[in-house]
Amino acid sequence: MKNKNKLLKYIMPLVLIVSVITLINLKDEFNIKDAIQTNLSQGLRTVKITEEKTKIDYKNVAISVKMPQIHFSNSEVQRYINTYIRRNINEYINHQRQESELNNNNEKKNIAINYNVAFEDGNLINIVIYKNINKGKKEFVLEKDSYLFDLKTGQRIYLDNLLKGNIDYEKIITKYIYNYAKKQNLKIDKQKIVVNKYTDFIIADGGIIVYFNPYRENNSNISYEFKIPIEIFKNKIKALTTSNIVANIDTQTITKDNKYINSVINIPIIMTSNKEIEKYINDEIRKDIMEFYNESQAEAKKYLDNLADIENKFVANVDFEVEKNSDDLLSINVRYYKYSGGAHGYYETVSYNIDMKDGKLLTLSDLFKPNIDYKKVIDNEIRNKIENIVKNDKEYEGVYQFNGIKLNNKFYIQDDNLVIYFDLYEIAPYAAGEPEFSINKSIINHMLKDKYVEIFK
Image (cartoon, rainbow, N blue to C red; front, side):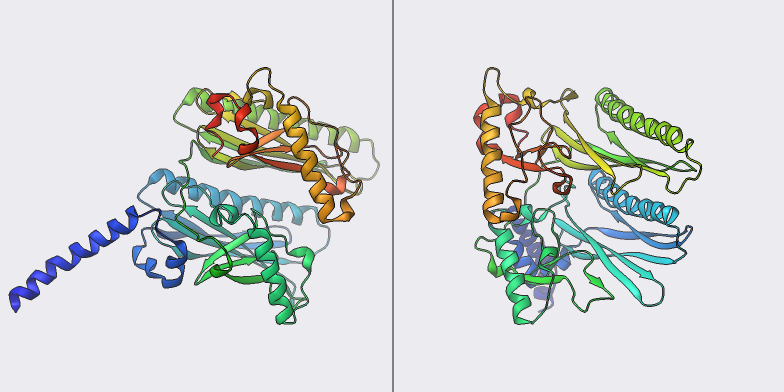
């Protein structure tokens, strides 16, 4: 009996190891739904979390921060995730500081930033950043940002990636929320329920929680977070595969507040193994951003020096978003914002689409084979999309004045889509923002140069 127990003592760990290896290798059969429902994944935790505590006190805003730091065996993934989360938190803090500097009232705002690991299974990690905002004694606003990362690559997974294979997920989730609100007699603001790629979600037992910021406010008893059961989707949520990142992205932030201007300038710092390409890209982007920054300062001084009394200083901000960072392609959108008085500010997005094999900054025409009419195909696709927008909502009738794209129109690349977009007022009024139209690679694949086919994944 003793020998039998000894034998079991050695055999059981081996059986467990073989089971885990088998589970990991069966990628196509692994179903996130099963992991969510059984929660067996808690035994597979591979990430350690520590935190960095900070307290910041500005003019009329106090912010306490608990910044999560993940520790993981893959140092590249660790760095990318930590930098991603830190950049977003710091961006939020800097804009809160700017708001406090520009705001003339003395109302004190207290913000507590905290975090929680909602899910981890050795393949994915879901980190939620909570922002509890209190104004005075009774007024409060609750917001949160949820990030689901692939621990194999460091890539962030958005809602459309998670629900891949369910092309109607937007309608399904929206319909479910409307029906739920009706059953619960909740008078929700339907304009707030916008479901798309960027809709925030959290992995939860038996499904996902989608929410819409701010998800709670003191002036409403409705919580805008909704549990969506996984069973409502036709196709199973299988194991996710994402491509490796091609560059780490850090941020340099410049802030300025004087009698003329208040600025928060976020400059992307790209880090990659090819230092020549790294330097070229960073120099190009930095040159453009600093040109905007310096011109904005000079413009503010020139204009405001001629006024006897300065009521409002200029605002000039720069932020950026990484749209694609894989498959030898880095696509970064840099947004420039300027306010110089009037009803609203002006903003413009500039995209940098970089072939990371040679550092080339791609124009739209670079993607396509010579002597091919890609413009005609894209024009037709955009016209069809505008027709569908108007068909679904008659309020958009006459809004878009589209006469065709330019040969080197603005664009960026996101997953397997070419996204064509337009400046403010270019094809629609200010209220329409910067209209953008996503065109799947299946529509343009036959026209792409061979070397650029693989960047659309």
